[in-house]
Structure formats: C-alpha cells, structure tokens
Image 1: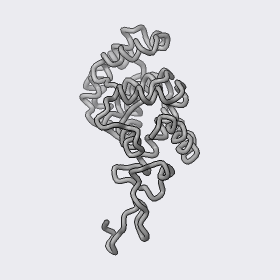
Image 2: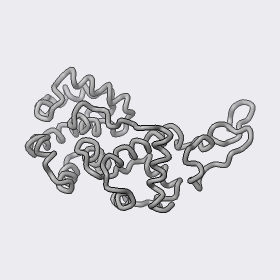
Image 3: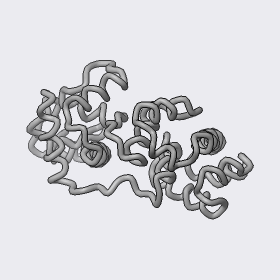
Length: 234
C-alpha cells in the first residue's frame, strides 16, 4: 500500500461511517482523564467511571490531585484496574498543576508538551498522543492496536514496526491537519470494531477492494466470508 493511498482510505471510511464526533468530553481536561481511563477497558466503562468521579470531586486537576487516592480509586471501579488508574490520574493531575494548569499547557509547543506527558507516570506514547491530538488539537497521529491491525492487512504496516516509526510514516503521508487526524483515527477505531475485527468480516468491508488480506467470498458463507456448516460452526 502506497502512502498516497492513505487519503483515499480515509475518504472511503468517512463516506461509509460519516463523522464520528470523537473525543466525547466537556473539556480538554476531561479528554486527558478519559485517555488514562480507557487503557485496557471499553469506553462504556470509562463513561460510568467519569460519572462517578464527577459525583465525588470537580473534574479539575487540583481537586483531583488533592483527593485521597482510595476515594478516587473507589470512584474509578467501573474502569477496571482502579487502584493503578487512580495513581496514574493523580500523577497526571499533579503534573498539570505543576505546569501552571491547562491554560499554560495550551500555550506550550507540541514537542515539549508531548515530551512532558511521556514523563508522567503511566502515560505511554498512545495515551500521550490521545491527549495531544484530542485535548490540545495538535497534528499528532495516534497509533493503536486497531490502526496496526487494519493497516497491516492493507499492507502499510511493516513487521514489528516501532510506535514512533509508524507514527512518523502516517504523519509524512498525510497533511498535517489535526482535524483530519482526529477524524481518521476515530474512523479506524469504528471500522476495526465493527468490521476489521480479529476475525474480520471481509464480505461487507468497504475497504475490501484495497485489501490484499481480504478473505475470499465463498457462496453460502457467513458475514466473515467463511463457509458455515448446518450447525453454524465454521
């Protein structure tokens, strides 16, 4: 798959799914909190945890940093790994406060902003880039497992390619537009959840003509393109 084809893939996905309106949040800081909470859990669980946190403390860095960690952890139970996530969130909140608050972060250049986030306990490259893109509107492309799966099948991802190497290739191939990056990543997530699953549903995939890894369409097959026996097994 050539780099120039990435834009065409975007247009195919957008035409099929429409705008995703992601990331759902009432403030940039809430995006940052959600980026930590969504690690290893479904978004529905994040929404439940956020609602519980809002019932305990203002969703702002200073009050959350001052909250007893066990109280915060209890509020985060729906998100799973709640003790770990409570410590990570408080580390993030303390960092935000130490930098001078959200206003000061919005004034930072992208490179030091991303580097600072990566130094926060529990914030890895994907989480940092979620924050940089969705909370601060910077042109940084998020690489996650869905992106790797889809673009490995499309032939763009090389074996064992590093996070930073793959991110750089996306950013070189696409216009440096945070609105485009925002929508593209959200569309990738939607497509990977609904169609390009671990066991892909190739038969109805909008990207099928572009995908060398697409399963062949078999007469009498199920939605994933594999033949079914009478008892429904494949």
